[in-house]
Length: 178
Image 1: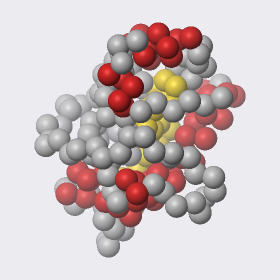
Image 2 (image 1 turned 30 degrees about the vertical axis):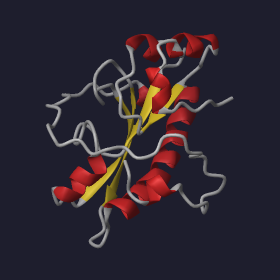
Image 3 (image 1 turned 90 degrees about the horizontal axis):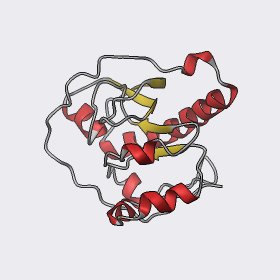
């Protein structure tokens, strides 16, 4: 079973206890934009996995797609990692590099990375299930958290499920909102 959480639920002081009742096996987090409490991260028996749209540790924190474009990067990617109490600082599980195309904007890159991230997440979950040694986590220098202006998150309560690889993405993703 899969349950989606919206950021607004985090404002409910009783939400961690409600989540605990579900006895989760694993948490998967993408584009959540908040640091989850350690008590929540520790709930699932197999840990909490984040899907992040950059090649960590580069562009830790908010708006990694926008900042890669603003800084003129020619390559970005997707990272899955085990979450810890820090901001995008847990051990890396898998990464996939992706070239940034010359005519690409935040919207088109977001759509492309969302699809790549979904595939990378499935590989990560399969590998965690099989307990592949490549997923023991890479200890790395977290590097400084870049101080950048805050870019506002648009959407929250949207169905982000993709029934097929050709299914359209929700407007907030397709428009480049991060």
